[in-house]
Length: 242
Image 1 (tube, helix red, strand yellow):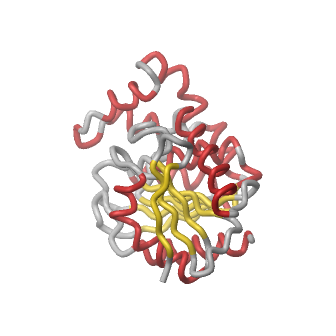
Image 2 (cartoon, rainbow, N blue to C red):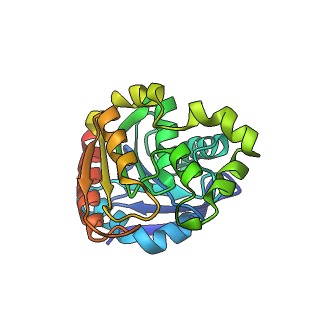
Image 3 (cartoon, rainbow, N blue to C red):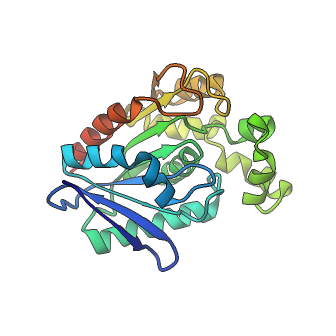
């Protein structure tokens, strides 16, 4: 039986913590949530994956709101992720020098932007139905969800988005080159019928980084049965990191 609790992380954000049976500390798994939800909503939909992983591999997973529900890899999300890692280290005896990252959908941009800035601290990256091209989503505005406007707002306005694009889009040539060093410890699960994430963007990301890509079939913008496989791979990689 795992332990789950809800805390206030940095004094302003709710956080979900899932421990293995012995509250092991060590390398934490940082949970990066999707668009328009926070840590508690993430737990409601994907908590089973976290419990499976923490039970089987005796690791600790932590997630928080990470700067808001529509950050798209901006500076606020990275600052909040740094604060979460520090908080988890202080309160749950987890490492602050090495972490594993799990990003779902919009959360992939949070995970990848942090990884690009801290490659030596990354033990593993697991991404599911991931947003890997900031420009691609901005320009396509898939499913007419208003994501173009949401991304502009995350960067203050359209001019701010344009100014940040080269530094914040994981799929630029320079950023793919940076992430290629993490290709051996990066794995991506994607749906072939995703109405939000463009499959060619995912395959381009895979080719540029050397990440392992795994199709989960025709799942739309959903995870299907992939959570068990994600939990097993990410738990194993995290445990190996110590």
